[in-house]
Length: 416
Image 1: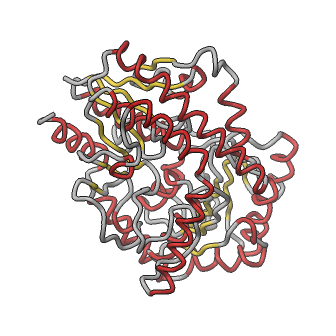
Image 2: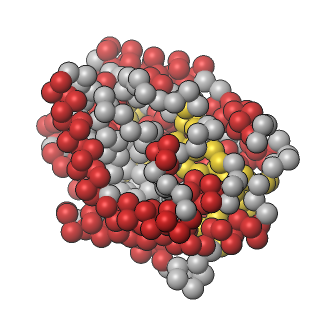
């Protein structure tokens, strides 16, 4: 059996699906240890995996909360640059501390999420086999596909390729803090940190279905789309919300674990839902103040948390910020969406949802009551959106989920 070390950004959107994968590998007799700063342990404790703390001195308790606060409010070009520098700092820390950590825990292989380059680089440095995971949009660069941080549609024409090329140039400019860190760490290790895009030549497993991506022509044969990594046998937590006897169509709205404090956006969605006479349930993840939640509750039902998959199973539509895990949960139930991207890769996810004809897109920056009402009405009534969501539901149902991902990992390491 193999002892895996998991290296990923310390964010629920990445840790949560990787924990499902860890539990599946654990059921097969493997051992899995997440490695990161002390604060990240709270996302792992009691969830079926071990945790090893690094950088106790440089990243003491409280560091992660400060980083998350920065992610929640990029605040224009200056804030974006500060956020990117902070993210590069985490990668630098991991590159410095992972060698000792992986030796100390006796790691025999590494599971490296695509969004944290330190995992693959240090695995190569220590000559450990490693697997890449794509818990969000695949980061594999391809000129025929827009960068995974822009809202552009798929366009294989010369004009589209021109825009994509410019997009990648801008991406490279913005990512200079990370590139500098990786170049310096690569020199220390005597390795090219950008070889194979920084990803595993052995295997990359994704939790999104092929139908949610743009057409691809350059993915390596070792890249495999999949379906959401979920614990099918895990009982749903007791709900703080019950549907009751309200006969109106149910719409769910969530902005994830970072943007749940956006009372202004929730209010616009609530007004649009009221205009259409539908029932809206808002889950804000405990991020709204009591005062803001009380004001919003005058327009719709408001809760901190819900058993998301159970709620979505009862929904006719959902309004989401386009975080990958919530999107996949909605599509697994065939729920048409209003895609309301706010930041990061969310606009690119929204563009792919539109291409798959499973959503109407209303960017948060340009959202209005009228635009949201029109988009929500389409999600509730447009047969094309219902058909698009149903196609993706079928793909997800036919996928192997976390079991298939674990199978591929075991097979890829069999000859290591």
